Image (cartoon, rainbow, N blue to C red; front, side, top):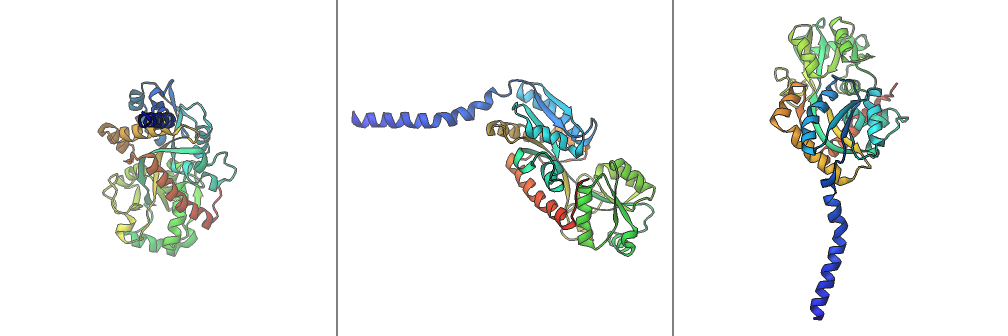
Length: 328
């Protein structure tokens, strides 16, 4: 009887100790209890907006609640990111870009949130390399010829970006250090204006999303120098990478979009969202839609996104410090 009693007591003690953990694991089953909001830091029709709307319908079906996309444009997406970081209703997430989740605070210490402390990674949805694009007025037949001409031009050439602190800006500053070119930075309100400036010959080069640059290149209005991926990208397989062409070695740079939650959101809910969004992104229908929008589907775990954030913060943050880049 004593042995049985001791075993019974031990079993009851173990059950009591495990009860909170079991309750925590089962908590997501009752979530969500109301509509889920996805905040996007750019206008309707922008690439992050299209990504959010692509995943919202299947996510709604999976959760059994409406999923509403709300556009909160401004400050390069940081207005939406700040609202996500400060949300306490456990039903607000964001579809954000890499700048919001890595270097926002490094670019501007006054940024009202710290992406590394105030945001919880959910899933890396899609990635894309950039395409180094040149004005059609620049004569060259290879990437090596282009960089030779750029070195000879020095600061007489200029490059366009959609703003200070964007990946296009930081990436070009990194490329300058690796290729010994020295074009002057000219910021524009957005990539459409950069493309117009390239076509008009007002700037000579730019790092652009392939989906925006490729149609202009195919039409003969601009020229492709190379893609910032290790090999050819499935998004624009007809264009060689800078690494492949031998113009640079080891130069890789991507833009990406990801789902994030407030750091205060319970871990079981974050894990549930991470699993669902990653699965949705990898379904054939969603994968095809994202590809058409210019994304290579990632669909990672929360840990996978956290690792990407760490790596990109180190890479881009190093350039920010080295080149003393400050957000305007």
